[in-house]
Length: 247
Image 1: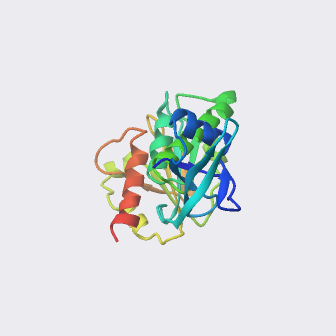
Image 2 (image 1 turned 90 degrees about the vertical axis):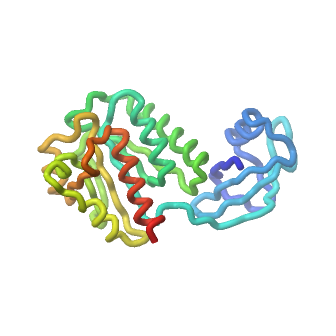
Image 3 (image 1 turned 30 degrees about the horizontal axis):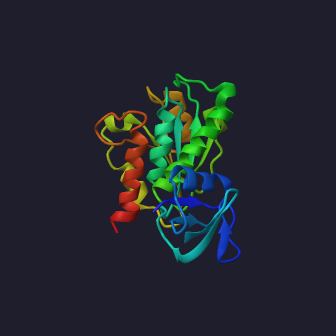
């Protein structure tokens, strides 16, 4: 069943669809009276199922036929920070990280970033947030991740009470194998965690030193070298296994 996010909580048993939602539900999906969809209520874990009651040229009226509370979000507040990569890799990471449960996604330019957004950053972020919203609907999330941009690594602002992990291939090369799992297994529900990944070519030694001084822990992601767009998926999948499947 198609899922949408509502900006406002309905005050009664009926509500009008927002214009953009109505366009997709009626024009794109060609839904008619009696068709149903799921609607996530704002700032909650509640989902209502609505049915088209009235279909007009200028609005669509839905009737709420059921309501349920779901638990599909990762139990820890999860942030991923990705070094700005080439091409459309940021779009891929935003889409897949949303599907895998990330709550916050930060794009940051690093010393070895080949691409530089500059004045295009605002437009890029608008598009990435739209991609996150679509992925959240498709994967039946209850929250849409917020996607933001930071022009420099030193401008990152993160809570102190957060587990911070920077993926670093040199850790694996030195034989380190357990740091990631140890940190994840120590997490409790409602904790916060942040993963940071470099772009193609990784992070410079100076950047690693800076991050370690800021409270990050360097961790390898196994014995193989992962692409910039693959590493976040590996970390989020491992987090899901530890926090959701291995209980």
